Image (cartoon, rainbow over all chains, first blue to last red):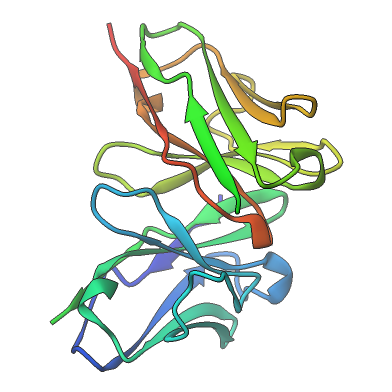
Length: 109
Length: 114
């Protein structure tokens, strides 16, 4: 069973930059695993920020970007704003199944 | 604009069945992969099941043999038939599209309890 590990919590200053990563127990993740990044605020449904490694939706602020860093999906937030405080989940496909990371609680402070 | 609306949640006794629906607008289910994802109270997200454009289906080990994903192309609606429900199936269930159609519904709460 694939286990996906994310940083449990991170703090970023307003205007600062932070990178969230997603580590898979199966080894390196590639674009062929179609990584996603989701944002969820308290009491709300999740929303997809990034899909297929680095593709943005129309509603995704330009300050969010997706990439692969050393075989790990990464989400970089450049110019953090208070409204970016939320839980962030990575998701990718592996061997016909989809796997979520445990989530990162991002604090903007 | 893609819009997904889940329904069918509620309180069900352990061992009982329940069918969830996800009505889609703004995308054609027969051309798009779709997922069911759940979130237990206070917990993270858990993938439940996929159906892809070809109709092939995939399931998490935790629901395999108990849940069935399907779609009605004429109604553009996705379903999740859940049988032999257990207390640990209690969660908000979301439907979500794949890739560029990865919009999420608002979810429907399923509570399994006697």
